[in-house]
Image (cartoon, rainbow, N blue to C red; front, side, top):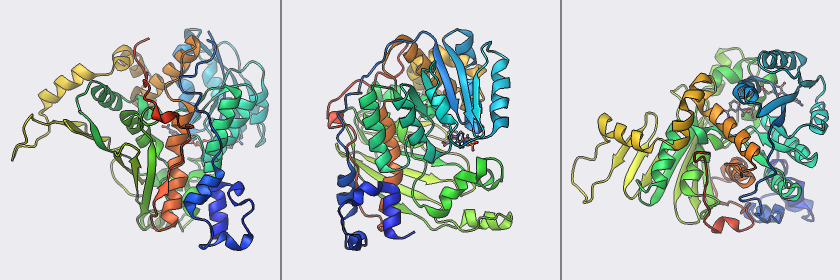
Length: 463
Ligand SMILES: NC(=O)c1ccc[n+]([C@@H]2O[C@H](COP(=O)([O-])OP(=O)(O)OC[C@H]3O[C@@H](n4cnc5c(N)ncnc54)[C@H](O)[C@@H]3O)[C@@H](O)[C@H]2O)c1
């Protein structure tokens, strides 16, 4: 892809309106100028937004592959409580829709309407009158168009990660949500994991003092999944690695870190720089496994550094090519304490600096903190979420429980449209930086300046 094609794929054609064709090359406008050109006015008026209460939330699900199938299971308890009902299902492949319908039939009386066969059948689901909430679990590039169409058809929408794939989509998502006054939530389940909530609770209680630096990641060996001919539909995930280079999966690390740092609620991502290593491991494995796809642009390891407006730094890593244990790092550095994840460890600074003995807390000392600062929502839901272990150890259940509970009660959602967009926009921004020798790239303000006001996170206190 030439430079024009590459930039247009991330920024949209409007970035180049009225720029002569001849200036598409390196002598043309800088990345930051192009980013300015595509920014749209937003009001930030969806912070704290709540909709009318819905006593039984009627749900349509688009995409019934690996993720859509897991998400369905998270609804069983809520359906049995008469607080939710799955009324429509759509997937390109009919067999997946039938499989989902049979699964739901084990615990729900109402039979969902089904849509399959054509790539645009999901639009008929989005138009179905009795749906309150559309859940989207399709390949990445479909999330934003489906979410926008859903809101235009008067539905709340919840998309899998990331919420958008290009910067112009990020702007369109926010504008559509602000205009239609619909919820548009990104289903970032890692914000609901026990360890991340324990850390968040400690931060909110001042255990860390003032934060200076955090680190997060998506380090997950996905070679077997991506190279399998039938794990992802049409190997959609592998195809991103053929033509793109950057951090493609930012939100599992960045979602919880953003809550720690009050991003959008008193602080903001200001600029970033991104660097990828060379690519070796995916192509070697592909060759050894007789894959029909052999060449990949995405480096094995991407490092993205983000600076916030208040001067905190974030290191975000992405590697799905290397064989290694899974990690999201989950490091938090504050003036009074440090946390490292995988496995979770805590260091509490002494009142006075010491020459030696900078050790993690012993197991029994750590356990005391864990007991004291276990998040209230975990205390409340642990038992129930254990029944749904298959949802990533319980966090998927808590996420869906919170989403439906907030809709039932007419409360603001934990993750608003600005959060989803801010965390997702780091992907195309990282690609722009990587393509320009790690040039510093400004992160647009998607909140219409509203990030400057400190607001309660309000997330997940007992209700
Ligand atoms: N939050 C998490 O922990 C988590 C875990 C896994 C996947 N995901 C996300 O979920 C999404 C789906 O991933 P997956 O692993 O389920 O992939 P998948 O390939 O198993 O599922 C995608 C599904 O979308 C369907 N689809 C494609 N085009 C469609 C169309 N036009 N209309 C209707 N259906 C269509 C496919 O047939 C397929 O069944 C991705 O965005 C991924 O990032 C999130």
